[in-house]
Image 1 (cartoon, rainbow, N blue to C red):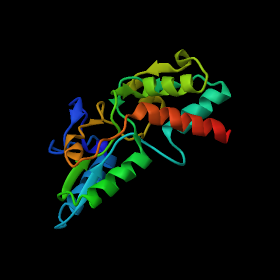
Image 2: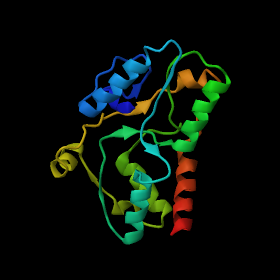
Image 3: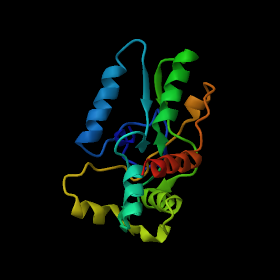
Image 4: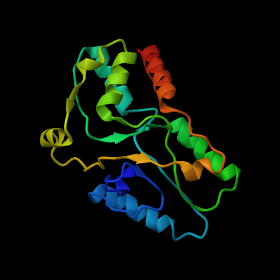
Length: 186
């Protein structure tokens, strides 16, 4: 999880020292440490996960369809990871018998803010992306006390995964596919 990092670096590599911002991130870091004691292990860190069930894209699509104009954080940056692509990365590591260790697995493509991602969902849903209002993390947290602190930067460096022969797909076409699927469900 990107929560194991403090988010100060724009892109996080697997060997970056862990510096979680809160208890949630500390539990993720503790899990990494425990698994790393095994003689043969693969830890896949990911960020901004999108798949079946409740997720950010589904929520934004629903809000777009309902006519809402949500306020979304504009100062947290990262790349989405679609669960099907994460599963393919895991299967690939097993198939090629990749060296044990930590690998970052997220989709490729440009780094965006949650706000920009929501704007793209709105646009793909037939709404004006300007209907998504930007807010700072501080403004958002003022209305959501107790929320786990997120790293400002969540983009993960996937070079180690790519060196095994896996090329993470760009998240933008995956987002378009996801919104089309959600529209078909409606």
